[in-house]
Amino acid sequence: MTAEGDSAPVVLRWNYDPRAVGKARAELGKVLAGWGTAGEVTDAATLVLSELLTNSLRHGRVPGRLVETRFQQAGCGGRGVRLEVHDASARWPLAVDGTSAEPDASGGRGLLLVGAVADRWGVAARNGPGKYVWAECGVADEVGERKVCVVDGRIARDG
Image (cartoon, rainbow, N blue to C red; front, top):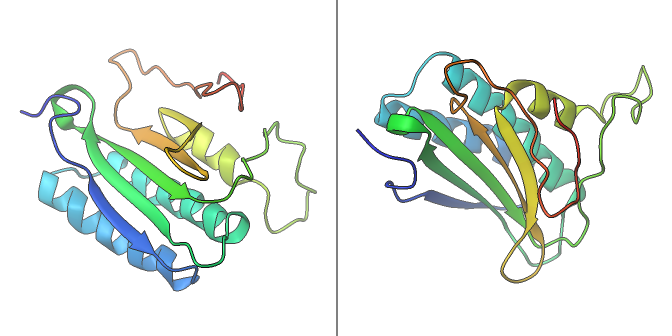
C-alpha cells in the first residue's frame, strides 16, 4: 500500500498544441493502469485533466514556455490521484458560479465540471512565474465528502 505522498510524481511537459490534451490523457491512462487504478477514478481523472490542460492551453499561453502536468498517487492507500497543470501565465482562473457562460456558448464551464467530478481542487502560485491548478480524484472519505477547495484565496466555493 502507498500512503499519500509516498510515490514520486510523473512529470510531463507539453507544447501549446491542441493535440497535447489527447496525448496527456493517453499518458495518464498508462500511469493509472500501472498503479492499478481503474473505474470511476480513472474516468474522473481523465475528464479533469482534459479540462485543466485545455484551460491552460487556451488561456495560459506564454511564448517560449511549456505547460507541465504532474500525476501523483493520493489518498489513503494511494487509490486516488492528484493532478496538477502548471503554466507560466500570471492569469488566474476566474471564479465560476454557473452564470459566467452564455447558455449557448461552447466554453466557460470547464471548472464547473472539475468541481462536479473532482473530490477537491484549487489553484496556487508556483515557485517561479505563473500558477498551477490542481485536482484530486478518488480521495473522498467513506462518507462521500465532495468539496471544492479555497487555495490562496483565489477561488472560494464549497460544493
